[in-house]
Length: 464
Image (cartoon, rainbow, N blue to C red; front, side, top):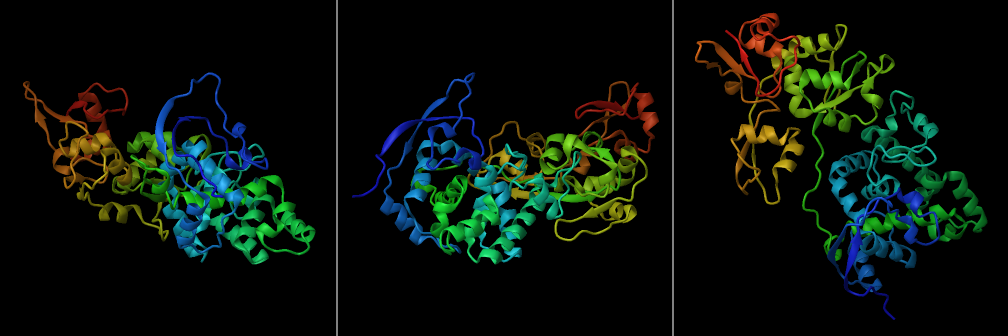
């Protein structure tokens, strides 16, 4: 007899979700795994959920090209049912975050000569949330406990927690998983050991009479681990068969391209944001391991990620930005691939404002283009004289590394009284404006009766 789900259109509840490793500590998936706030009414919407059978899923798995063993059974099938029917919202949430982290996962796994399918484990661990914390204190995309994190060279203290750094934690997870694979010689068993510890796996092997496969020791593993590997395999199947289960993502989230800078001082992200006009939310998103938005003196040599579009601006203005952050720095810049020390004078001399073009593709929206290039939607609209968010396939958009075009930035206006004025652009500061117009900051402040250095885009300043 075929095992199947009846084709239907059913209501799906938008719910508050808890980490998967906690939600499925029971032997079978339970409705209670999904929590609904009593204060929030459910939001009903309807969508078509395709019918599928055990045999159809089995055929799709056999057609998949993967580097790990994958044989369907009732346990895995039950989780496929759960995440494609009963808890589709969790799967959709994962899809929205997937493109932020999977390219980095794949590059790291390739570097360590590991199967790329391991990346799906982070879905089970954290739902791709770099700042999630479990009830027992595990943190980050890969849910490291403090002791294990420190064992792999990550800072875990009240100021900085590298377990929340996507790059550092992914590299540590790859190293740990590879050591577990060397220990047990089987990737599924290595995943089980990642969840419950190698000691529990060895105990399960002994109790099973020496069997060394996950399904051979399955009945002797902790309950949570019995669900852990099948969830991993369920997501491995689902994310490779999205169309078959009517999953589509209209607005994916893209990573912000970034570069790394080492300021060699204590400072706050709020101050850096104020001086550079970098959105504080972007700085927090790129640097989740920095607690309370402060880089302490004890971690003054850590690298801080900034949107790549802002790198030319920082290079041009390293001296005064560093001076404004605190004591005179030795500013060290690093690319994503190879850290390098760059002198302030060299950085300023080598930096040029370059215009880049982007041709709109099918499915693009201003939000995704802006996120991909580390700029804001308002900047895109201003640079391209757009009065709405509507764009067309094939349309060419121009970007200026997070700054307005130089010709526009330097444009002056004359008022009726004969005064020369300047309209503040995104990324401007009084220091930048003073350099463009051969004035001092104090002169500009006196001309405009300013009591502080704070200015806003669109503000008109008298410059002569």
